[in-house]
Image 1 (cartoon, rainbow, N blue to C red):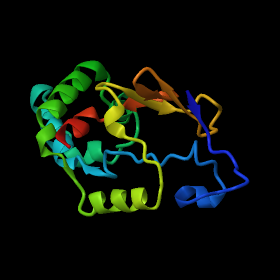
Image 2: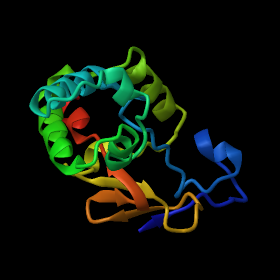
Image 3: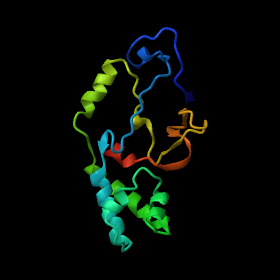
Length: 167
């Protein structure tokens, strides 16, 4: 199923007041670093990576590349064999997921969006180990739902599912 913002001749409320079709308007918010503070989880996971792989790279070096795919971060850090590091990081992130916390005020903001009649995408509908990727429609911003997770095309990075577990 594909969802794209489309003009409407008769907007009703909330986000539809912008002239968008009420049936297709959805507010999708990223979890990691937006709704949920996962920095403690990432710090813990990176500490585990450093110990298991004998790396002398502080968390700050890893952190400044966040937002890129994991393999790209490893390349930027000069680490050739990213897969074993990624496996360690993923396991350690899951084990430390209890450290994730929602940011102050998030619940109130989400309630305000709902009260304004915005339709919210529910991240908890995504399954564990889902992949989030850029839109295959040539940067159109089109979101496609396939199975029970959101998909975009290449340049993906793992969606931080353990943050959902913690919430």
